[in-house]
Image (cartoon, rainbow, N blue to C red; front, side, top):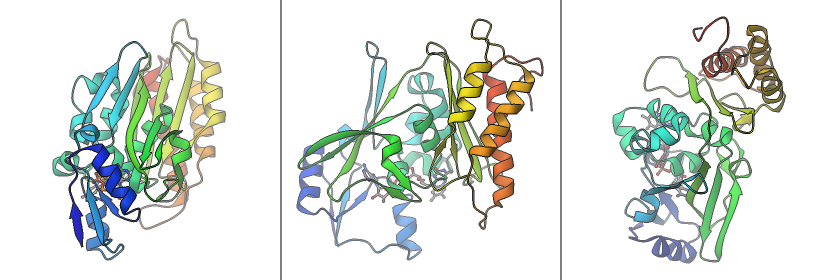
Length: 289
Ligand SMILES: Cc1cc2nc3c(=O)[nH]c(=O)nc-3n(C[C@H](O)[C@H](O)[C@H](O)COP(=O)(O)OP(=O)(O)OC[C@H]3O[C@@H](n4cnc5c(N)ncnc54)[C@H](O)[C@@H]3O)c2cc1C
């Protein structure tokens, strides 16, 4: 096995063009586990991306209101100010990932590359309508995150392509992430949800993790809550929040596996949706529950 360690994005892309079937390695927290468990054979060529500065950095353009995050930015970095202030739900999701060691090594690009329905970064990218910049030796393309995540651990990346950057719009309005697992820490989500309010557009978005083959958006629930909010006062009735939770549950298409049952997942994701909505908007029931 040859391990190449490019020091620029151009070199990484050139190497990948020469070896389109090479295995990309970022933090290795998914890839090495799969190899160690025998679920994946290391390819003859491995391209390690963690020395590519363009992938390890992020920037904020206040004029366009866009934050651009390199695929190799780690969860630890996503949790820190000022990034955490610009994208609070992403910081909140990052705090729930693994342990400090995993958060120091694991990257957002690796989360997308694995594309597990339980990936904690992915509901946030979906709720915030992230755009993904993909590069290869024949050029680049930008696609919606929804077009990247096509199935269980399946992306639409073609051989020879790598994820370079993730673009997210900074939104005015509350956003948050919540996750249920079998314990409180070091846990893969049994159900998860990210809710983001866009107070300028007067709309709510919600994306669900671990309750479908890939991350799911809930068009009916989004429409219902966006219509139910009094956008002047920021208030919404408890009944509307309950209905929102029911619609969120209904949008889920979970399976039963070793972590949980489909029934529990459907129920839990509705509870998470309603809980996030209560945090986002003032209700007479308050923010608890
Ligand atoms: C103990 C433990 C706990 C964990 N807990 C969580 C958790 O709570 N929540 C969670 O979401 N995940 C968790 N994970 C999984 C993992 O940490 C994350 O999915 C992480 O984001 C993977 O990033 P990485 O940089 O380590 O990716 P890698 O393992 O390096 O790569 C993962 C996949 O993405 C591909 N890839 C990497 N970079 C790119 C790129 N730029 N372009 C295209 N493809 C690319 C690789 O080829 C590989 O297929 C855990 C893992 C472990 C071992």
